[in-house]
Image (cartoon, rainbow over all chains, first blue to last red; front, side, top):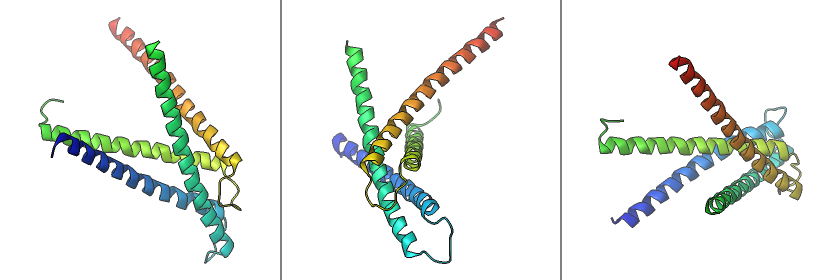
Amino acid sequence: MDSEAVKKEIIRQALQATNTTNARILIENINEKCFERCVPKPGSSLSSSEQTCLTQCMEKYMQAWNQVNATYIRRIQQEMANNSFSSSS
Amino acid sequence: MEGLTPAEQRELDQRLQKRQVKEFMTVFGNLVDNCFNACVDDFTSKVLSGRETGCISRCVIKSMTTQARLGERFAELNAAMTAEMQQKMSR
């Protein structure tokens, strides 16, 4: 394998590892958070309103995750742009 | 570290990297958690409202700025402590 292919393979594996860790942590947090918020008094089964709440909570949490991701990346890019700007002046 | 074969060095680098990735993901997860707690309280809708979205953006930026500043202060304190210790030892 030439070096380009090796590099691509390494990047692919790194992304995969990140995504898997991402997903695992995401699910753990969603579980904990949404149960906390939506099922204040656990009964022997989930009522339909609790189920709805859990679904909406999960949707919103994932959207929040994406929002955090986007904001974080935007901010890092800003900082990098600022740094390169100030070092060249 | 001397005495490590190239293979062992690679293994070490890999493990350090994995740990770094894990750490970063944990920090990121906590960030999402905190901002979700602070900003999202309305579960009658499936979609983040504009208010919640804006709140999350500001929350992320504030957290990042706080972390950066804490890092700077910590480095300053560390340097001060190290300098003080060196002074004491050279007396």
